[in-house]
Image 1 (tube, helix red, strand yellow):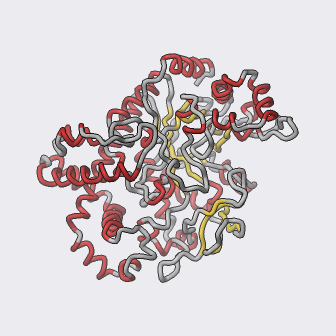
Image 2: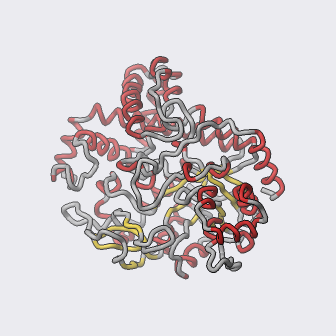
Image 3: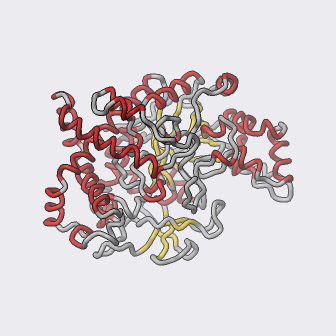
Length: 510
């Protein structure tokens, strides 16, 4: 399958960053139902042409989308219950009874307790009462996706059976090491539960494709996202130990991370297993080809988180408490993207997340593949001595066309929260650069971002709403209840917010 950006040179667009979990709904978490379509209607009304999301995979401990249990599956918690009721797989009472969910945060434990039994009920009803054509479509889905779905469904069932996703510590050795006889026995013993998981994945992708089709029909492209590494407690790691630096007993020998940077003085110790790139070479990078291809079936553009890891990655010995004592290890990024282009086409619609420690080899890998990098406007104002470095690459007047500019990302504070936390000298520089008082800083940041020559300009939904630090999505290197849980209370924005953003989009030619 060939992919193309299908963009004319000098086309410039505006986008909004909003993960589906953050959509307002009555069921404690955003879903792929009415609220997703209402959000797309809002974007269309405002002349916004890009919707950026975070990874869509099923989350585990900590509920980070960047630590999903699968690189290929969808998050079952996003499945819309109302749609299942319309299809006859749930009762009306199931949909209209709602616990007292928080309106501004996702309580993942509460959501799981409510939704998982209903999703299982719906899957059982589907199995018992689905029309022949629907059953046929499901069987086609299972057959076409067996290469990842079989392992994923078994993995999820085993996680629940052992009440722990840490296959490398908790599971019996014969399952940890995927002995053929043990896998066959488990597949037989848990066959009905495995079927339920597969049906739920069918529900997810059926609903998601309707959302994506609606977006594309209305001139909106979806920017998806994948983390470069897989989670240690994921089916990816369990089923692909030979592609990772994991020993014969299923134990990691090293972990991923980044050295000290703007986000953390000690660096970030992610804990993910790192790739055995020689093993990937021997298989023609087939796992990566499947991963990118699958992602581009669910979205139009893919942002690759930690792109620099394709040139060299930070490898930390197992057992370290921080990421400070790691080393840089070269990766075969050039070979990988040659293989990807041969399989998927020369014009891959990829955004390179090139933040952090960026060296010439990373820039060469990005530029030689014509991938746009990222510019974060908040990073432009690292003020020293009350003076602005006018040559800062993130300032709008320094941005290049082949880049994507953001006010901030999911890892940053909101723009209002960021500005409020600055000292007096920093605020003074920001005000002078933007030529505005305190209460207009957010909108002037948005305006300057839109006026830049970067081909795509994206603002988090929280900045459109001018939320303070209470709207922050994630604080890197922490694991707290507030991370990944922010939700919009409503999609009924004040008319002036819609008019003002649409006017800025039109004035900036986006």
